[in-house]
Length: 186
Image (cartoon, rainbow, N blue to C red):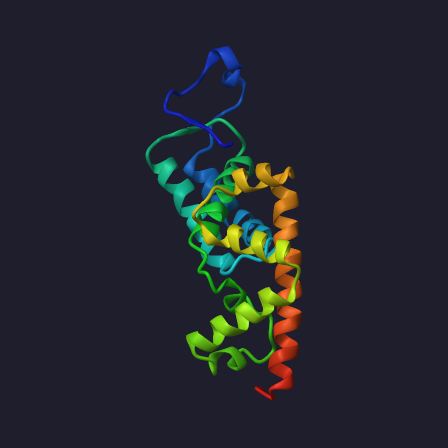
């Protein structure tokens, strides 16, 4: 977890050897860090990687403008903030997350469906995969419980939970694409 301190240096930690991150450092490395953040979010299949990267950079800039002393390197600090922003984005995820992230060459297929049809498609896809996988996927995206608690309940790591949810979602997408293709909704 990234940490900040308002004191200029903490001699007990030996921070006097490392100068703090400045606005000039941030400005010089802005483009490279933004590119890395966008790639980070794309690897995690975020809904809007550019927006999330901008949110991280805005938070870092706000801390620097408050003269907060960043103890880590700028990249480490941004990565810590990026993890928090991703968790916040997951909590805001709508129930119909499957339709929002549908990887299709013809995005108009889902645009032609109304909300009720999308929910029916989602329910069908969830019913077509093993019940345990569908339940975990729904609880993960529900946002009413902690994902850490869900992983602990299942006896797996946070990363294993994300992989489990991702695989369930991929299976539902394949099923949904077959259904939409068979209905001729192209």
